[in-house]
Length: 517
Image: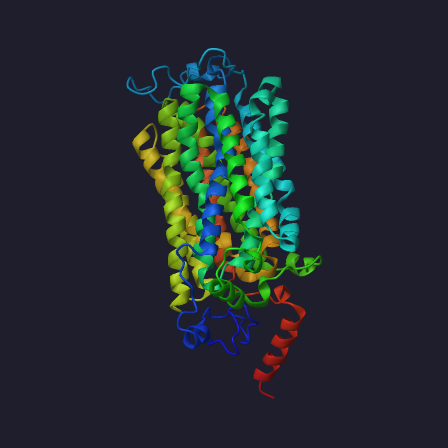
């Protein structure tokens, strides 16, 4: 549908289906240079700052996964590793010379006798706190602006990370509580990001801007995992938390200096870019006020499709994020540095594909080849169904480290395409309430982060191939179920309850005018 009267693509849909074609024809025709350059623009500088912010966020989140291998006294806490079950896979003479025992640490570095269930609880502790602040963070960011919440969330989590060695020394309960508090601080970050993009992202650039900023998560995991292994081996595991926490504090300083909540208040944005962003987003770029349509949200089928699909996708993602180093250690018997690098390798592909998928999705919309709904479904199916198949292959790769790493890398790489699918769908169906919706969907999607490490710890307590096969097949089945749900019930249409009152009245009036009498 061509745009009229200068409306943006977020304007009220006038056709019966509610589907809109994302065009900016009028702007392009009237002003040939209406779209300002992307290079060095304020909106892309914001995306890059978010990219590095989420790189830090995921470094803070995953550092314990690798450090746990060095923190735990494997001889005392995992006696099954010396049994025939624990050594189903032979230990390479060129690989891990001491089997799956704890790596050597510098003198004076403490180690702890935590069994597998305790380790699972500690790895999942972060997500207990992460659950709590998602919805409040999205709600408040949508009302006040997201920069203070995103920056404050990273800063608070980084500061708490500095206390990790002390908490570990005090005991597992203290470490559990500290990790939960870190999750509490970090829970506001993704909803705040979405609230900011509701005010900053022109509709034809949504996919690439949000995918670029969110891809920092995969990039952060890719960098943090091998770097953590190197630091653990060279300086001892406490140094990991000091360095990661320091990096987060430094990033927060730059964030608060350089970033503004919206284009209208940015001191360095060009007038041309400011007008382009504001005019293309339209009325939906403003704050949503104190009231939100809770009941329509609860009854919204497209919203529930996002919730279920993200929960299913995150089950496999969080399983790998928290437990992959343990699999590399106890089954494939890679040493700490090999373990960290190979655990990180899948996230390099995921980072690249998430960025590419955003560009491709926007290109499909700009050229009017597909509707928003079709684009979101295609990228969601690709990003959930194909990774599920590769996870099954991992489960049956046996003791072959080459096959296991190959299939894990393919799974996470292809999974990056979902970044342009279900993971940005909130801003499609309700731009005004994007921050709140992401808080809601991410709350549910964080539940696997709590449950998956515990289930993994239970299924793999004997460190057997069969136990890990069950872990990978379970993740694959859940991921495939999420693809099915979004295919059947997902949508890219702006929902009626997401429109302002005047827009709803206008939509009803114009629809009535289109209905023959």
